[in-house]
Amino acid sequence: MTLAWPERVLRALAEWPAALLVVAEIVVLSLGVISRYVLQSPLTWSDELASVLFLWLAMLGAVVAMQHGEHMRLTVFVARLSESQRRQVESVVACLTVLFCAALMWPAIEHMNEQWVILTPALEIPDALRVAAVVVGLGLMLLQSLLQLWRTARGADLAWALGGLLVVGAVLHGSSPLLMNLGHGNLLLFFVLMVGVCVAMGLPIAFAFGLCTVAYLQFSTSTPLTIVVSRIDEGMSHLILLSVPLFVFLGAFIAITGLAKAMVQFLASLLGHLRGGLQYVLLAAMYVVSGISGSKAADMAAVAPALFPEMKQRGADPGRLVALLAASGAMSETIPPSLVLITIGAVTGVSISALFVGGLVPALVGLLALCVVVFWQARRDASALVEPAPLREVLRSFWLAVPALALPFVIRSAVVEGVATATEVSTIGILYTLLVGVLVYRQMDWRRIYPMLVETASLSGAILLIIGCATAMAWALTQSGFSRDLVALMTQVPGGAMGFMVVSLVVFVILGSVLEGIPAIVLFGPLLFPVARALGIHEVHYAMVVVFAMGLGLFAPPVGVGFYAACAIGKVDADLALHKIWPYLGALLVALLVIAFVPWVSIGLL
Image 1 (tube, one colour):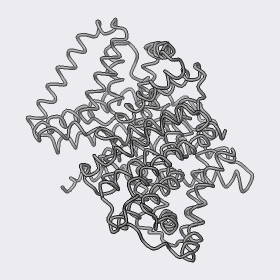
Image 2: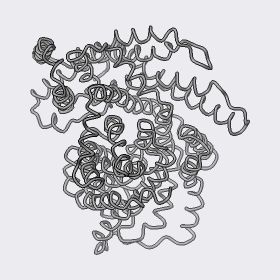
Image 3: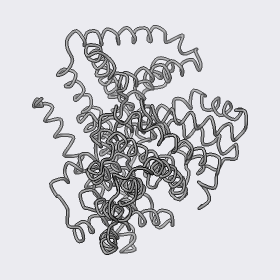
Image 4: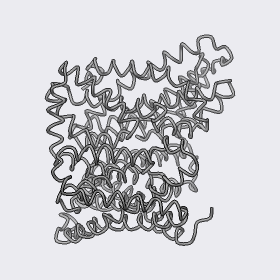
């Protein structure tokens, strides 16, 4: 359907500034890197300006994600409803989105006004200029959700949705005195039941977290709602998170510059003649590419188009290919610079360098486990055999791939050796990819730059809004005393450290399938990592177990959204892959147990 002119105007107001902000971030941080490492004269204002622009990028990116329908949400339950039921539920979801944005508009304005008296250290500008991004972002999302509601909702469905929400609101308002004295029962009502219902209906996860936090504070406490905005601001403004949009952009950038294609072609010439050879190539490529992009969707999108046509031509089953692609996404979750690892560092204080070092061997264990399954399945498959590539061709493809293969090693070594931060490394990676793409591979398609910038802003905004709203929700949980009770409960789990580890495995597999990695880490990382330390579990070891478990849940059907993302990227119906993925997930479960109960796998290289 053609967009009405108000929606086209709103899209232009969000997309163009968001794309330009991605470019501005890259330019500002690149100037900082060049000044620091080339000219030996650090710029005092570059990080501060990047931080100001970052919140604007995050909020406008969240608007773009809403316009493109790319906010992370659970649709598996809504998809099973009839068409009329689905319309009714979608009307409720649209109304809840409007309610979330409207509820926070005035608190956001108050928070902005409070920040006028605070000046930034280097630029000496009011911090309100940065915080104004929250006001503008919420306002644009409110307008966008109202327009979408007007365009899509039917009168009867809208009346049903508004009536139901008014009844729920009236009941909560009337029960407010009771709720204030309910204790931890409020947590079950707002953060288990209400969040669960909102997520199951398909409300984007960020809005579910934020709206339920607002409801909890509004109806069961006397805390002003400005605290929600300030927590969202704090959660989205960590300097460490500056690397998120840059790594997202880098993941897409390597695809259009030819780096990903060069790596895959070299691996195919080396392993493609073996039984199941291209399956091994897919696994190896995911291991290598994951060290560049940091985004699982970008990883799969870079590898699948380069391999799937040839694999299908050799007679490979499409369902099995997508199942392997999804499993490889789960396997590579701990490979640096994973966005989940960066988030763990941001919210728990664990050294990102240590996390990057610790993530390599656990992913290798998962890779070997998947290779065993591939070997077993391909042992009698003669149809896929081809002649080995001549040594000359292998050497030629290796020589062409050397500039591309060097990138993940540059990224990892720079962070691990403490030469540069994760944000600086992502900037260096972009500059390196630009030079190699232009001078070596010469495949740059400049027409794809703008859509890539918009997609980077959209994905970054979706991720960062989740982090912001989850930070507000985690603050509410902490203030309620839940964190103390959870710590006390988890320290009393039978079996000590081993019992705690087993419970963590189960909990994070479930959380990974429902919430995805980043929101689950922001919510529960600050609560459970101190418990792990108290029980004598190394924080990097625990991080690897948590991330691998969430990756397993994220790509496990029928709930894990990563599985459906793999199906979409591979252009294969989910039903064809549903029954083919279990051997791979079984192998990854064995790998997870090895990682959990053999600490050396995670900390042996530290």
